[in-house]
Structure formats: C-alpha cells, structure tokens
Image (cartoon, rainbow, N blue to C red; front, top):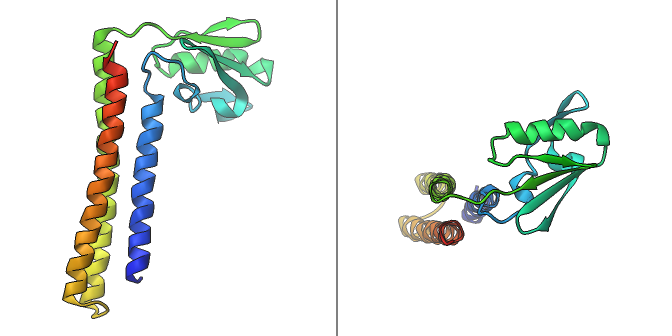
Length: 186
C-alpha cells in the first residue's frame, strides 16, 4: 500500500464514521416527526425479519405524527407490534389501513436522556475516526520501516493524518452541538 492508498482508506473510514453518526442522530426523537426514527424497526413478516422501510411507505403528515402505511395490509398488526416492542416511547394507533404514531411531548428528563444518547453516538463516531487514524499511522510506520518513505515523509504524513483526524472530530462535535440544541431548546 502506498501513501495515497493509506490516505484514501483513512478518508473512507472517517467518512463512514461521520455518516454513521449522522444516521444515528436522525433516529433520536427531538419531538419533531421524522421517518428515520422508525424506518429501521425490524418487523416479523413473511417468515423473517424485515426493516419497516422495506414493508411500507413512511411519511410525516404533520410535525408531530409519523404515518406508516404497509403495502400489504396483512402485516398491519405485525407493524404495530414491532413499533411497540422497539421501545421508542411512541404508542402506535391503527387507523384504517395506516399505523399512526403520534409523538408525545418530551419531558425535560427525557430530553436530557436523549442528549446523553446523542453523546454516546458521537463518541462511537470519534472512536471510528481514531481507529482510522491508528490504522493510517501504523501503515505509514510500516512504509518507513520498509524504507519506502523517509523519516521526514513519515513525520509530514503523521501531521497530515492528525490534521484530518482533528477536522473529522470537529465535524462530529458540531453535529452533536446541533442535535443537542434541537433536543434541549423548548
């Protein structure tokens, strides 16, 4: 592996960590309805487990309601059961051929719990970024040991790796700050 490939691999790992954090943040209930809050709920249907987004159309008719309309009406009860057991703090209500999910008002305590959860997701993303940094540093040291790059190249590359890591951590921190602001401002 050469220097460019090492940097490309690190960039890929870093972006995956950031994308994962963005996805996890989207699943945190801020009191505003969002399809991403329920799209990955696993439903027992057709003899196996399927994600809710694979079984139905998910929409937000208003800011405080999520509507789930299964394409096959026979899985309506299974969808309701899966949402109840997903422990989202949302009580599904079947209205005709649609499962409506009215979002309850968030209490101060619940908002703080969700902020802690967002911190956990951010820390997981930072761990992913740091793992990418560690892998890149090790690969660069191996190149230097194998005499493929000089000591000066190693130092320059290590500095570049650290700069990329710092930028990614800063991005995760700003995403977390935005999510916290969403959660804690009433």
